[in-house]
Length: 60
Image (cartoon, rainbow, N blue to C red; front, side, top):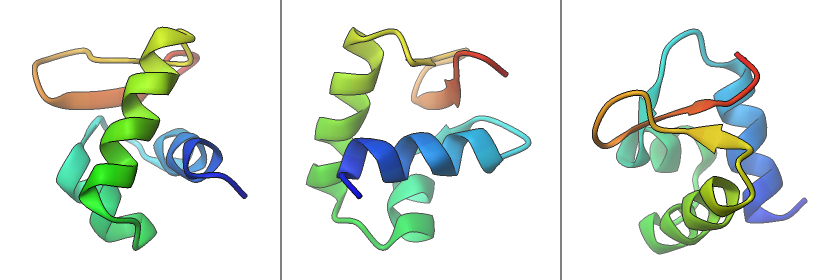
């Protein structure tokens, strides 16, 4: 499973938007891997940022 898939799965399972640090802790991925995954997922519009520094799945 790629970093993007892991981050997307975590956000889909979350009830509320998460910070990148919270995603890193939940997934055991490094902060840099999470940041790269977030950037890629935002570019493909699979996730959104409802408020600064928080991320959620775009289909929630």
